[in-house]
Image (cartoon, rainbow, N blue to C red; front, side, top):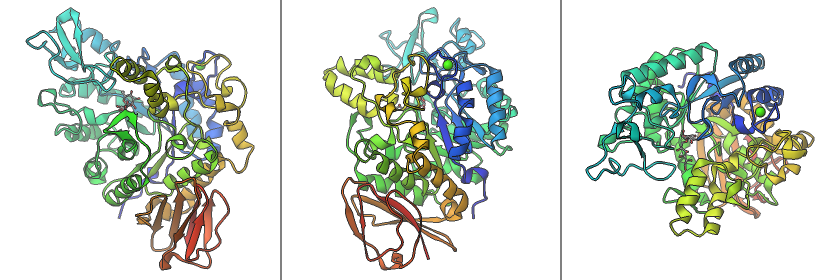
Length: 545
Ligand code: TEU
Ligand code: CA
């Protein structure tokens, strides 16, 4: 009973342009580099590209601090390059969705440059200012996601401004109708250029009401989103995905129930935060598979018919999936394929993060000096200055630093993984000699062809896109298995998340003397008896009669 949408069976590929492909030998990825890889992406079979920001920016947070929403950062190229990318992608039936960062701007945005000039400047209320507290300090205890206070003192006018992220990312005041109007106008300018949609950065924060201590998911939020929908993308057939860190399935319905006319879907991070102790990414804990399965199952079941799931293991803020949830050593290929099948056979729109399709892994730089991410560097400094041993913090950085996903895309085994002719802005992962696109394309049992097959299956088996989800062996601590079904087909998926063989009893109703194995990472299964033994990280999907 869901109205079909083109993004229901789409597969989105996220590009972090800074690290994708450097076409002009300056050590930074760029738009022309992306254009040169469109045939590769078309061969993989993806039909949407989500670009992390390429707008003008001082690059304090690698482009998530925007100083001109309607111009391209020279590091990435020109607006002509952007138009060329849109045109070339369109020729390949690939849509481009832009990263919309409107919770905050850069402190170099003209609006902020004006706002900080004086208290009565017309742009003052585009941002959030407060008087110092009685003792002259910060207005309140609001913190920044990147460490320290969320308030920065501005000498010029003797007031503090709010920044949930870095002090160079001042928060916009969304209660100001002029802010709403300016952002909507800019969004329509991009929509008129023929983009396929938006990824909306930390959009749950635009409803903040600081004096009531509200930041995410406040009562002002959904009215603002519904207004944005009406004023911009609502009557267009675009994919919109909101980044909302603390959403629950109930909250996700508010964002993605088509009747509410807000977004197509959201990114929620409940499965990601399971390996963070007390939501602190710098105290990582091992994967608890039963918990992991419970969360994935909950989202499949509860969002089933009143919203839509996004499906992802990693992005530019997260460690590499095969290192985090699989095995980046002996079973790198098998576990990368297992993770791919586990995710892509679920109900929802899958997102592939650049390099995930060739099983790229976390990097473990010996020195903190090789890291570039502002969040990593801020917290390394803050924690080691407050008693955490450097080697303990470096181990946490190896586990969860955002730079794990930001090392250069590995194209071949030449210097820097073929990403650039010169030393890149961040070092390449030394394993580019074995893990690279060229090797993957020359190996028909590579992770790449596994992803290509999964994408083909999504286009050919309606049960994957719209079938019901039912967890199987829910209590099992090593195997995540589930059944997808509709009136015509039953697809049974089994995934061994462990590095040991596992034997499971197959329930009667799933046993069959004849099955059609549509994908596997060892041998194809011809039948399902009463006992099945899975090899380490073995995964398969079979159509049952
Ligand atoms: O990320 C939201 C965000 O808060 C993440 O940075 C995440 O909370 C953090 O890494 C967890 O420790 C979005 C963008 O994806 C991110 O790249 C930006 O840095 C951030 O917003 C600010 O725009
Ligand atoms: Ca470049």
